[in-house]
Length: 369
Image 1 (cartoon, one colour):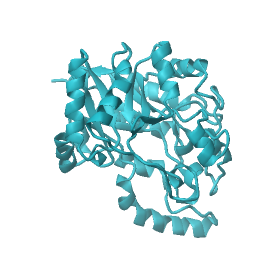
Image 2 (image 1 turned 90 degrees about the horizontal axis):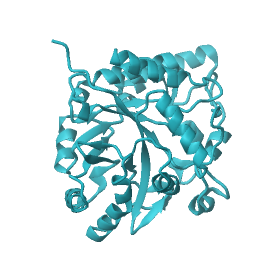
Image 3 (image 1 turned 135 degrees about the vertical axis):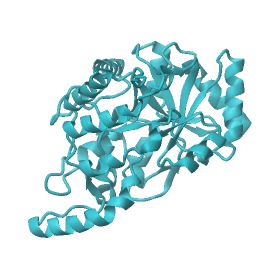
Image 4 (image 1 turned 30 degrees about the vertical axis):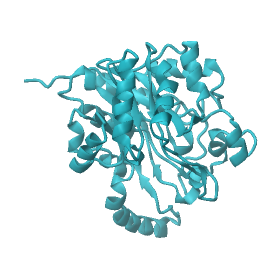
């Protein structure tokens, strides 16, 4: 008997960092956006692809609606079902980078599916390109009053016809569910508020950097309906010793010096999933490259020799995990649409143009066949 083959719904994480805000002016200097880190990047070793220069869309500003419309057009053309916008709520009504998404909701454009992912973590300077490791803004949790205000701030989006749902319930991803001190109370409150406002509930997805039986059980206790995995670190312990030894030999022979956290993409991609990801309650994540050096220099995680051919192979592996699921659980996350300073993007650049987008589309089309 053939396995049930569901439709594919690829949801690409979307970073709303590409426009100036007062806080960024204060922390990094007047006019800072993520393009500042992208533009100042330099090669750290022979063959290191930096800087990465955007092609079709240029160094855009997300306050411009035509840019947002063109992004959606490109994504849809190459098989992406919708954007999953990173959402920043730090407690006590404090938000950052909310303008692009709010304008998408209020304007009705682009007419392209979307959902939200709550990036519930404090911002630290080093992680975002500063030399210090001080906390720039702290993530707080204010209990029932704060959680209620948070819910009503996103309710207009939940009620939008474009919002992505599972069995009528809006998808809402949480980056670190375990960091919410009373997570189950938060989830229960939002489920109650959703039903009071005409929704059958919220479909909560917890993001996990690792997946094992214990993690799955703990997420369920926190009230998560599903898990999405981003295993960027799973390979690190397994590869570090072998790769470090190989790099020392290669460096001696070639005179090239690779940073300690530089790995070939072909060596890392086999660790981006495991057998547990075939579970219908786990939504796999496609990793579209990685190079954190524009933000953190030599200390950043770098995956080099990342090619469209390898990305297509990796994407095909992740899509195969959907076999046997029904359409309601056919979600695959894509990290990411536009995380340029992490080398983690699908938008066209000057070197590869549309090749990675084409690789994604071919992998999706082949899976459907």
